[in-house]
Length: 434
Image (tube, rainbow, N blue to C red; front, side):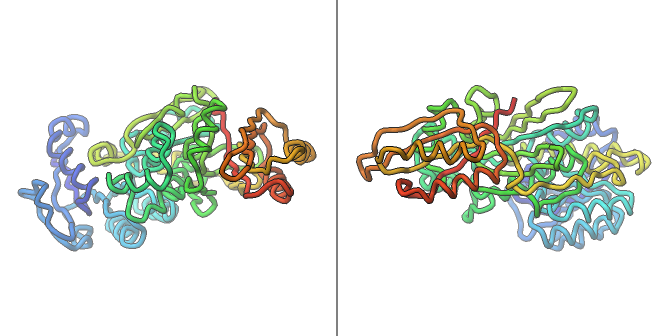
């Protein structure tokens, strides 16, 4: 069979890795795909002398590539929302298959993109959009297709995980580690997407849709960052037998789907609690298989390229398949997607870590306990530190049993109104992840 011709839009970190892997492993990839894969054209804004593009047509216009009649598959690696969406929709309109690593594009515009792809009978593959080189989308969509997925939880942003690891292992402050992460290239100059949970929410939105058979609903994902965490919180969690991780959690309940990203206390003996540095991991619980864990590099040139090329191989294998018999984009048949609602955070249930800064006055702890008891919130453990010399305050740390968030919000408001409580109560969620 004649080779399949592909075009690469963008030759940054992932684009360069994709080019390298396709050239280096050409023979192995051909054996797996059943036919050759030829890079026919690359669209880049400026030359990239570090990459060998000998014999490949180059252009600075992505639409020249998308409109090239010789190209069968477009690989979109430019990122962002606007131009990426325009070129992907144009590629689909032209009857070309698409491979992308763009999690923001899929999370925000995926419903529209997949509907257009079904109309035109083409594939949009996006394994590289979540957790870099870890094939977690394929695992959930295909490997666990016999299961009713109960919940999933993931460390799906390497920057945040690197920061929390350094804070725990070396006692460093958040701001200090963030500067190093930027110097190492783990974090952007504007790190908002990473440290405020937006990047993780994009990825969680995609995973939840595939796990539960619901439309992509990024706008309903709850996000909370790690910027308010202190080394004291990290140390207190450790003393209580927990590790703090910036976790994405999607859980099926009778009322609807929980979709939330936030700092989370996890028991220190759980495998996912010991995922450190820039590594990623996703834990998935199914009714038949139980809990499974997928671990590996969540970003980087060749780990992400590994997922891009794997998608490319899948598309090439499916070129002769009847479009109606292909694996659905979001795992479930398009007319079978569920209308399960996404729950507001106030209706989600979790256990909680509370840190209360109080004056060294008798009775404050009793008042706090009374506030929790009145709202049906049980305390699992409590730790009261010595008076801090600098300001004469006593840190009190409590871990509660599971409760609906609305009750905790009400309890915190009552605590902060007490005379002895001098600053906002720090609240973190606790997940056992059994």
